[in-house]
Image 1: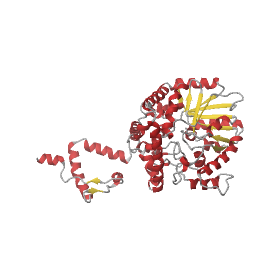
Image 2: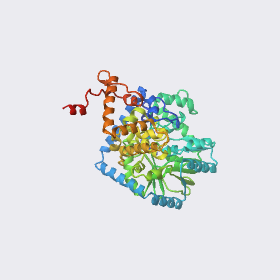
Image 3: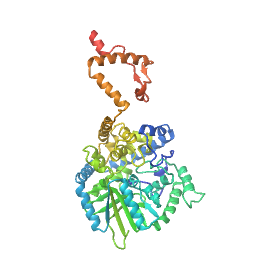
Length: 496
């Protein structure tokens, strides 16, 4: 879901102040993380701007977290609430369905993204609308709804400022909380002049002017909208209430003005009761944007005659979440409240940006969520758990205390196990099996060490090995290896 602090309503400063080249188009990534990250690593401007942006986010979040005297107690409470919701998820989902239905809404169940696309496309067709408003939502992107509606002949209007920018640029969001982080104001001006109807040619790159142009464009769309698609930050099971948090107010217009409101949310968004939000709505804004509170918290329950939409549909999406829930270690990832605090402290994300992680979930949250939702069969998804230094900075700032390194190490094990069943083993697995066979016998081990030492010393220059051959060359791409000593410890011990 869109985290608080996304694109302030009165300026573009936090969304586009730091310039960088455009991110890859949504859905374009199909390669391993290391390969997809190379263009970003080679772009010094991108690295400089990402560094400045995430440093500012870190400072704001740290200052906000230091204010409450009970911050650690709030984090403990948030962790307990999310764990309790997940452990009894079946019960809470049934309560949620009853509450929504009693309030006049309709609940739809989608086992995967394809079914969610079918359900939402059908609901939009029933309204007869040819244009749909879309509030910022990672779950909507995860289900591929914008593309599915476009194929059905429905125009999707992104209402969030950052989402509007990346949609016009046909690219993936660079950040969960600030989707247009990779665009500077000059790039946004050029994009608006090229792709936004009705923009005056004398438009300046002043953030206020750019924000004003976006508002003018969106206002007409809001007024005539017949249907809207949103996500939800939380779903209260006891009341059937959906909650959306944002800073610009676009989502609130989506949930109040159209005749038909369709909310798409993961089944992991359920919390047992409305009162649980007392804790979660304190944690989310401080961890996400360093705010004491979110400017706009919209909550809606079913339908009410004469007030708001006349039809409300809640689409509950599984799409791999049940499988993650069955994993005793991996289920911790479902505790995530999408604050994006882990992105701002991650040394890998700071250097690569969001593109290499895929079109939906960037940073550490994507490294642990995407492989669980999509599986680790593809090389691209299998590489994500390894896109981490395991430094633990993400765990230190997570408002619900997810041990992200523990989950990533667990997923790395799952990747290795999945490769064991292949009819043709990977080169890495062949190498590891050869090492295991060598080290299982003392004589083989001693012989390999002696011969390996001779070859290694031949490859060394000035006491360092700067390039190893074959697969071992991956190790020396980022570091030198000290040359081994002429005499091993075992030989020294034997002679003494």
